[in-house]
Figure 1 (cartoon, rainbow, N blue to C red):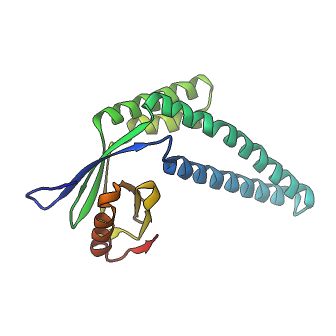
Figure 2: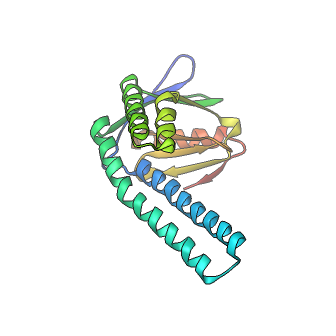
Figure 3: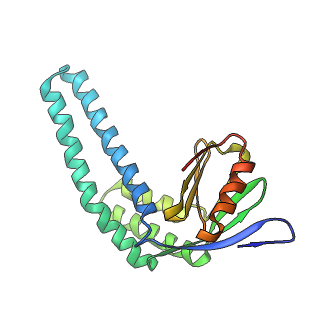
Length: 201
């Protein structure tokens, strides 16, 4: 980490996604929430159509189990493929000052991300899956820089073992990776400059 003449802190962090599973666990949480929402929707549809019954509940649970089972099988396979294509590492550049933190993918990482997104879009179109194609398109066209205003941060979640500080606004979540030697400095800086934030961890 270096501090420039402009007072901004700058550093680069290289995440080994095979040993640091923070990204994998976050994706898993999102998928589990999706499975739960799917089950609730199916239950409400069944309840409106046939009334509340044990059969409606059993059907909803079976849908959740089937969808959850598919995700459990596909997620590790998809993550392994992503590791293979991305070279196992995620490289990010960070800039921090008293007003904001900027998370920027390295140029090489951004190019790999676009390639993976385009491949997912083509695969989704070939399989006739509009959802997969749309997800791939979003990944391919997503920006490579995320800027978080410290004044808008609601929660700060410190995960020292993963070298990760989550800086969360209401709708946006920024993942800040920091080395062991700089972790306390960055965490304290964020505590001091995020007046609305609750700190966890």
